[in-house]
Structure formats: C-alpha cells, structure tokens
Length: 241
Image (cartoon, rainbow, N blue to C red):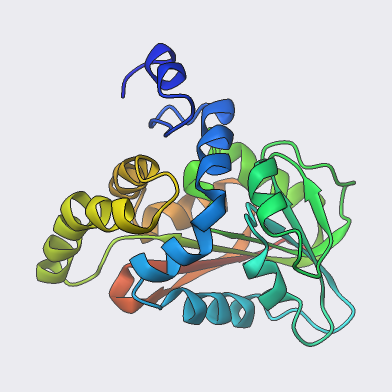
C-alpha cells in the first residue's frame, strides 16, 4: 500500500509505513471488535506474560499515577493498576476505547505525540506495542518525558529482533506468511495484520531503540529481552536535575 489514495480506498482497513495518524486510528477502530482475542492467538498466549513483565519493569508503587499510552482496549491498563496503582488508559482510537469500556480504569482519548496531560503530572509512562505505530516515535518519547515527574520511569514494550539468528529467520517467515493467514481466521480486520508484519520488520533493534530513548532525554536506559527477543522491554528514567 503506497499512498493516501489507496489507504482511503480501503476504508481504513490498514495503514502503511508512513503511519499517518488518521489511517492508523481508522485501522485500529476496525480491529477493535476482536483485538484481544487476536492478540492472544497470534502470540500463542504469551501476551498475558508480557503484560506482567511490563508491570514489573515499571515498578509503580501503590498510590502512584501511571499513563498507559496506546492502551487500546485497556487490558494492559488493568494489569498496571494491580496493587493500588492509579493507571489511566490513553489511546487515539475511539473504537478501541469503546471496546474496552467495561474495564474499570479511567480512559482518555489522546495522541502519543500530544498528550492531554500537564507537565510532570504522572509518575510513569508505559507504551506496549504502540510506539511502532506512531508517526514520529522520537517526538512521542520527548512527550512522554514532558508529562513524567523527575525520577519517573518510562517502559516501552515492543516487538524487537530475536537474538539467535536461526530463530530470527523462522520468526521472520512467521511474520510474513503465517501471521496474515492466522489473522484472516480470527481478526475483525485481517488486512491490518499485513501492516503489523511490515512494521515489525522495519522497527529498530534493541540497541538502536535504546539510543533513541537516550536522545529523547531518558537516563539509565536499558532493556530486557522476552521470548528470545521477539519482544523487548526498554526502560528509562527521567533525570531529577
């Protein structure tokens, strides 16, 4: 899919790697109906363990406020809220927020590049499988820093690059061939998962993403690989000075 005309012709079925916000939002509106089920099937049930690992990496304490950006149906926000944390779901897809309306966490519509929050208003920010879909990820990383209090934490949970070369080859084959076929069986908008595979392949590896966090002003940046590097948890801290 090459240009806006083609994206418009498909009626929001999928975005392309230009990641125009309107196209991405429309695509996620169309996958919202069966989004959680599709994620569980495509991940082989690993999505729940990735959410738990993300919460552990954030390390929020009871009473702290955290923002879950690109929260989708807020299933990740519910996980973050465990133990008395005040977790707020934020997404620019109205369809995704509506699909998660029954989940008992506060929700706000907002763009990762222009969050509807005051400066230094949250103790931490999490974005899971969403930074890859932002038109300007570096602008989003700076925006996350703006809304985070000094000493606060950012956690980015995102698809990454498997560390073992033979496994990376098998994984790439899965992305480009098997994933779209599985999506056709379970998703409410299977065409979107062609974009998913393309965007994962185009995403920077673990060291490159860490460098981008550092360039955006985050300190003490590091990462932890999950499932052999299929997913990586990047963590950074906002300096106090």
